Amino acid sequence: MDRLFYRPKDAAVVLGMSRTAVFRLIKSGELRSIKYDGYRLVPADALQEFARRLTEAA
Image 1 (tube, rainbow, N blue to C red):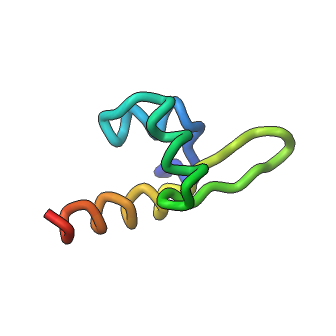
Image 2 (cartoon, rainbow, N blue to C red):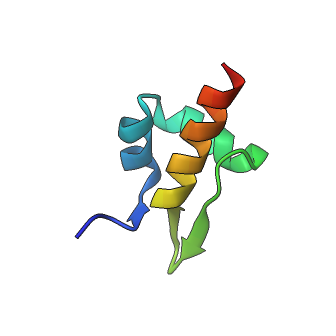
């Protein structure tokens, strides 16, 4: 089964950027995330949406 959610450090690896950059994207609203039980989680589909927006803008 594929992962449904990623911790920011894992999302950073998937996107090929730093953890700090991922937190910046979350704070700015460019990357959706949720908070669950004290953890910040990025839905897998949010990573796909973000990547799609980047490629469309290029």
